[in-house]
Length: 109
Image (cartoon, rainbow, N blue to C red):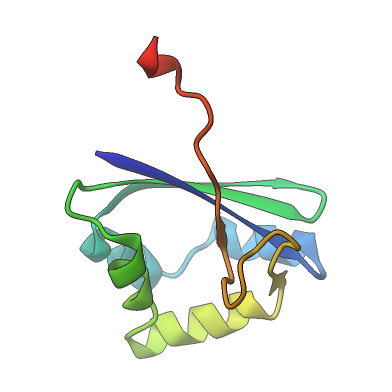
């Protein structure tokens, strides 16, 4: 299993963002599972969002996350979420969700 962490900022309405994530559309759940995402958790502090995903070993974030919004409902969800989001200042050019660097893992000790 692989683990990835990402961050993004919300530009408005954290309460609405949380409301949508309390009732994620079934197509989005299915899409995540088809991509090889085993677990996904999103945390929020103020307007900073942190997402951690655990994936199958074959998961390739560059390739697989590009295929995320391939269906009509996934595209609709992605467009809707983008109305709330903006890249963090530390994001690389063209990066929406900025991938975070792992600096400590308790399992290593």
